[in-house]
Length: 369
Ligand SMILES: NC(=O)c1ccc[n+]([C@@H]2O[C@H](COP(=O)([O-])OP(=O)(O)OC[C@H]3O[C@@H](n4cnc5c(N)ncnc54)[C@H](OP(=O)(O)O)[C@@H]3O)[C@@H](O)[C@H]2O)c1
Image (cartoon, rainbow, N blue to C red; front, side, top):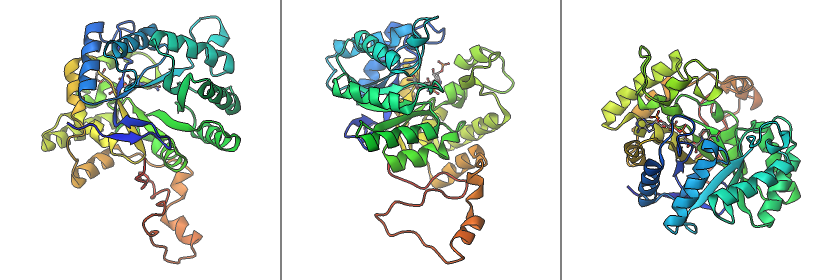
């Protein structure tokens, strides 16, 4: 396979289209990989040409960052590696300022991450989750200070409302701060909500989308079945919980799994490869973060971009996974547009112009990343 690289958002940072997720580095959460397996996956990823590593300060209680830093140092790869890590979650129960997105926590968290990673700079530093409180002004000013201090190179936002990301980007532009180069969001055949706001925002305003959970936490691998109640993998441990990231056993998702299985069989590819390929080639996607707990899984997924999904098969995947657009997107269709243009025929712009933002209720028709 040949790993290709994109510049992330409007930045000059070149990242591989497949990133390596490290949320599964460490057994602390009950469903991760031990050190030997994590190292084997790291080596396989590097040997496949990957340069983009995603971690977070509190993945597996800090083990993920520590192992990643050690593996990178051991192979002498710090200059080649692009390290993304994140802050927000609380590191000290009972202390409200040891979590969240305020300046005090960001400055605490960045030093702790640098120490665990064994490096003196982070390539991409991301706010992990919106704390529903801290103004974007405080976050963006603090991030810009960290860029100027040489502790981080680029800025990203993960799991925030689109309006918050847009506001943060506008503040950065108007105040001359380092802009948001990346958005990290859940996206897969099973979870397509980001298409309405984040993809148009990211493509128009310079933020490349890093996809997390491209297999919907393993659902799209095909290992789970509607009738089964066993121990297939990570999702089984969340069957009786309300954790928002893991509620995947729905009628809609079973229909997607069934169609994906048929399409994968017709292509002669594994279901994970087809699911990763589909999401990686959607508009606005800069990089897909692969997750795995076994070397064989990662090796399978690393071959996900070695083929093209033919149009007819892609249309079947699009159709089964499509969700009706929510208001106001449901309101912007051809009937309303005809009233906007007064019935005049409006064609596509000549090449070189940005394409239209939305095609009625469908994926956006933007190809830049
Ligand atoms: N920003 C955020 O809020 C956020 C949230 C979540 C994740 N992330 C990032 O995204 C990365 C990927 O997320 P994810 O782990 O949820 O991704 P995912 O691809 O949706 O799920 C990975 C899981 O799918 C199963 N799997 C993967 N490849 C397989 C294969 N070829 N065959 C069979 N099963 C396979 C494994 O499950 P089993 O282990 O059960 O076998 C694996 O642990 C994380 O490591 C992290 O870096 C970010």
